[in-house]
Amino acid sequence: MLSIIGIGLNDEKDITLKGLELIKQSDFVYLESYTSILQCDVSALEKLYGKKIILADRTLVEQKAEETILKNAKTKNVSFLVIGDALSATTHTDLLKRAKDLGIKVNIVHNASILTAVAETGLQLYKFGKTTSMPFPEKNFQPETAYEVIKDNLSSGLHTLVLLDLRPQENKFMTVNQAINILLEIQEKRKEKTITKIIGCARLGSEKPTIKFGTAKELKDFNFGKPPHCLIIPGKMHFAEEEFVGQFK
Ligand SMILES: C[S@@+](CC[C@H](N)C(=O)[O-])C[C@H]1O[C@@H](n2cnc3c(N)ncnc32)[C@H](O)[C@@H]1O
Image (cartoon, rainbow, N blue to C red; front, top):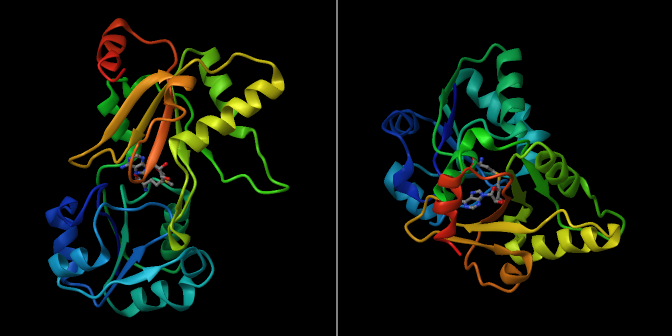
């Protein structure tokens, strides 16, 4: 049996009772370690769960799951832990599909996700358009997709959540500041004025989140502190949203 369990956004205590029970019954516990980070160490999870945790990197999940996670799940109880919600990234729905194709029984335990935690800013969730992500630019790879999505959402008055690249194994996390600079470069190159207001967020769901609302210029050098960071380009705001967001100026 495979249990895909969302463990929430902050620390070991965000697990649901259902998730914890399944972990306790597990022979193997994997933690997907490449799409997000918590505000606690793996040792804190191991202590509360009472289980040894196996870190699962992208290669293990996307290329070697058949020989490891899924092979074990055919005969044993396996928990696969995901930071945030269980199924908010394609890499996890892909694992779910492969498990089902192999006839493995699967449990899914949901939890909080960055996709809903952005409501902490006061923006209404149903007024968000397509979510996009911003990769670290490479020498021959400087995609402008995020900028295009923002433009598209803005043309319909919708907010855009921009998820930022991270490489936890290299301790590399894109900051709000880096993302703003990338967007401004694209905007300047195109001689456009798409992006005016920005909401920068860090560590949503934790006891010490940082949310800052302002112009790109105002936020460019603001210190948002520890990762993970994301940013939001607000679309047309209802006056109630504007009032709420205004407190983060
Ligand atoms: C690929 S998403 C993973 C989403 C996760 N599975 C979930 O359900 O929340 C990871 C990105 O989301 C953003 N993110 C995740 N958690 C966050 C948080 N607590 N505060 C701010 N941004 C966060 C960051 O940009 C991070 O690089």
